[in-house]
Image (cartoon, rainbow, N blue to C red; front, side, top):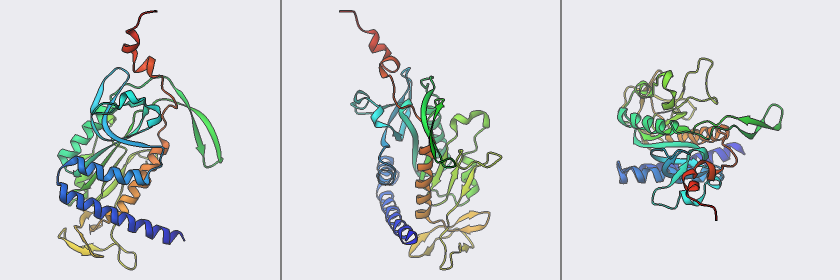
Length: 293
């Protein structure tokens, strides 16, 4: 049963990838259309508790982030006054995660993505600790814990990369350990690889988890090729990427599936406070403009 279900999901994701490719062919580098394409997919596959918008993230001091492609946040925490204007202003304390969407991943777009993530990580949080629930699979119990506020997680999502060498992509995201504000929790390039740096995937030495999902043959083996020249596999055009195993064609549907699964895992471990006192934190200046009646 699960095999049949998985096969059906893969066919649907194949369809989503074809939709993405058609959008890219039509939109080219027009980023907003490409952001809406992945946003529509996320809304289908993520739990309904998460809202997704584009906009600017603000903190309690009024400091703003750069324009963020996709913001995943708790809409039930955010008063409507923050989202009435042409640009939505999302309080950082209500944000789970941000996604930088790139049509083509290269050194320049990677740098821009890191700068945007950094602009969010530098915002001020409400400093008070808060109580939240935590489910332990080992004890099968729901426990309440005290959490320290943490900044939204950062993710980079790209449709493709013209670079054929996987190692080159890894190098774009080498961040000094002293500047972890720039560090994304996950990087996905549909035609290349998935990289993670978080507690759900960290090795003992804190290395990236770097994974490729190859197109396989009838026996389930990845096929190797002599170069990055165009090949057709299972009726799909592919451009093999150079990996430590040789030139291998990447399956975008499998990459997308695992991106969605890992994104859901990241969201599940990111804790935000259950309520926010906006009057005393985000609306301090407005609260000052009063006199006793």
